[in-house]
Image (tube, rainbow, N blue to C red):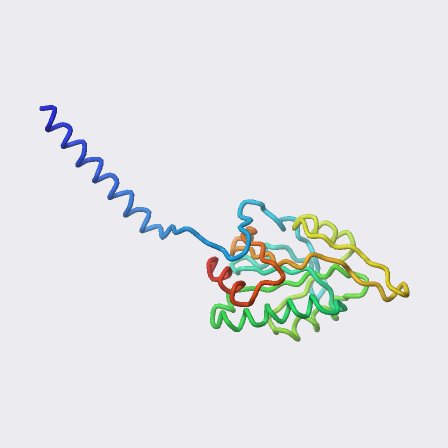
Length: 200
């Protein structure tokens, strides 16, 4: 009797394990391995409120359904920003048809010089689908704080010839607007595309 019960328990346990395995396979759950740093659960960017080229306020909710790549920079940046934007343009080419499922957003850290019109012209020069967001100093402060993104004004030879120090990382957010990956500004288009594909 004991031997029969033991055998029966083993069969039941095996059947349960098999059912669980099938359920997990059906869900398609698989471990996600990013090239960049996994920042899932940080909820970065939730307080983003900036303005688009038409002056309309924009939040992450406006881009729901697309994987978002957020970058902080400014149009008069001498080297880092144009290099980063060019890398993002190359990333979109690598994604092919999937590029339509991605929204690149450049947030200006220079609200005094980067008007919505100037920023729109700058971003679209790299890719027509890229969006530039600017805003007031308060909007920028709130948004940057939400992303934990650093920026600061650096004096130049004249008051008008200042530069902006800023973080050069890419924030990749999933279709629901949750921050998932922080990618180094030195990352290649291949690595950025790889991380984006994990979220499509």
